Image (tube, rainbow, N blue to C red):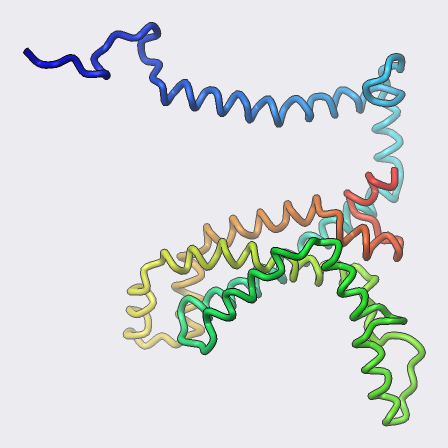
Length: 261
């Protein structure tokens, strides 16, 4: 007589396995954690008064106030410029470093890999303050050295020449800040990619640049696109760099405009 297996045992709900129940629980939990705060935010946007307190009336004035204020549109443009510029910088640097470490025999590859991950251990606020100490137009260490060097040739500057308190300085720091994370995402794709594709391109007479442009980048495009989207969305919601660098210069993005309000 064949022993009765677990799969052949009757279930109380036909077609509902343990795995499916687990998936339902995870999806329900994810929907709860995402949708409840979002619905509360939308609900509060149509009411006067502070959220969670009794009283208040339903109104559209909140939307009229937000979307008739030109500062809101300045924040939108600054946010997309900040996130887009930072993403472009981080993705380009990450692609170059991933290719150099995973596809070449560059010296000190292991050390380079380790050093690229060091910024992950530095909080964003300390990262911003460190660059202020380097590139502040008045007290920045690098600016002071450059002014002294230019003074030798008779060129006197009272400030600068670099100023970190600009939108360009903000997305430069944002780009550097995201390089380690984007590097981990793209280098993993490089590592899993079949190197025979690139070897076939070399055998066919393609150079390094052409192989990178016509073979490597197209194959890795999904990973690069995913890294680009991740970096852009993280830049949109970032606060440390816009708060430390942008607020003193009256440069507002989404996060700092919400904080200021």
